Length: 135
Image (cartoon, rainbow, N blue to C red):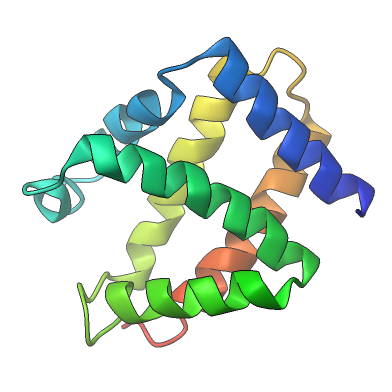
C-alpha cells in the first residue's frame, strides 16, 4: 500500500478509536455547513447512514489506490447521487470534504498538514468520480 493511503487509513482508524461518535460528529458539522445540505437529510435513518459512511470512507481509500472492486461500489453511489438519483449539486461536495477534514482533525491526535493533504487527495478523487455527471 502506498504510504499516503496507509496514512489516511491509519488516521481514519485513530479517529474512530478516539471518537466512537466520529460519524455523528461529522454529520453535525456537515449538515450545518451549508443551508442546502440539511434538507437532503430530512428523511435519513442516521443509524444506517453512519454505517454506510464508515464503509464508504474505506471504499474511498481503496478507490484512490486503484482497486476495481471499490470502483464498482462507487458506480452505485454515482448513480444514487447523480442526476438520475438525488441529483446532488456538485458544489456541495466541497462541504462534505471540508466537514470530514474538520471532524478528523478533532479526533486524530497525530493529524498533520501532510495527512490533511493526503485525506483531501483521497476524498477529491472519490468526489470527482461520484459527481462526474452532476450539474
